[in-house]
Image (cartoon, rainbow, N blue to C red; front, side, top):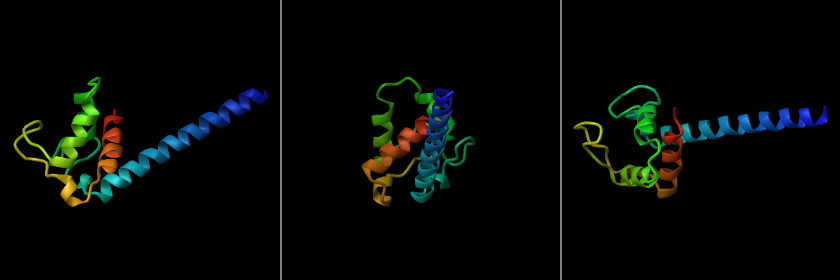
Amino acid sequence: MKSLIVTLMTTTGLLVAGATYAADEQALATAKGCMACHDIGAKKVGPAYTEVAKKYAGQKDAEAKLVQKVLNGGSGTWGAIPMPANKTMGVTEADAKKLVAWVLSQK
């Protein structure tokens, strides 16, 4: 019985921690202006994050490639509207890594 209670408490703690992580990363995306052009599940100016996650699923170099795209901008992958270089708007490499990991976790 004690092991069941410990297992349930541990599982609950992990779920809460995961939800907090997601909320923190979404707040970072909002603070850095990402959500002005992107949404989690719907296309805006840029692609939905769920579509980005699908496109790059299973690609070993996806995180590094997308971190560079977030920092330096890019065009042509999702249409004619370019993504600006976000490092000029205060996004650090550490921010970009957190954001990209979060985007790639969207399903």
